[in-house]
Image (cartoon, rainbow, N blue to C red; front, side):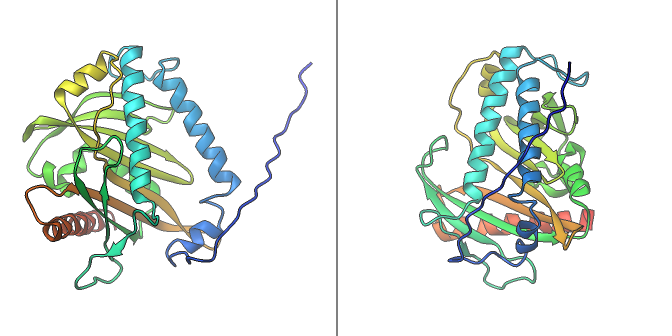
Length: 286
């Protein structure tokens, strides 16, 4: 006999007042979307689906013909990429963010930090630039715009005047928008982009990193290897006003290796790319 069951959820959270939340993020955190039960349950659901689809237990009709070993290797590498991106976004005493704006634009303050020796990244000193802005469009609309490869030439500098197409893709859940893809850009024959898109009701992300063609072929064959990754991308959160979803909080992070240029120049380039990209996105979705 089947008996009814229920899941009880008790949430405990310790909050430090030593560093106040940014006003843009305070409503999102206080709403429970950031750390509440809704967030954790949604995340558990997405991760469970990702495991089932990445191992080939479940598949989607739109998936590329990739072996189970290839799916597994691509999924492992994409997970490392996402974890690295999330680490890059975080603030810490070791990776402290500082403002890079000489003339601060209203509602667009770009911050940077410097990183060296992070595991899984190319050697050398890296400069990271990031910015969070508010958009009027819903977080689903912004996510759909950014994940659509046909839109990339509109906002991505390296895709300008290029054709972007998928070399391989497979779903990581029943929602076809949750997927891992490898993209090719017509003007850059020597490099590919590994990309993962994921969404649920509490937030979404579009994260990508350049990879070499030889590494892509190895991953397709199921070879496990520690590919050096320099992730970029977006975290897309619903903007909360009281109990109402009101637009989007869009965070962009971009990285550049300090090589053959001064540290100052690297900061200027990274900052300019972030601002330029966000302006294009604002024009497209607002």
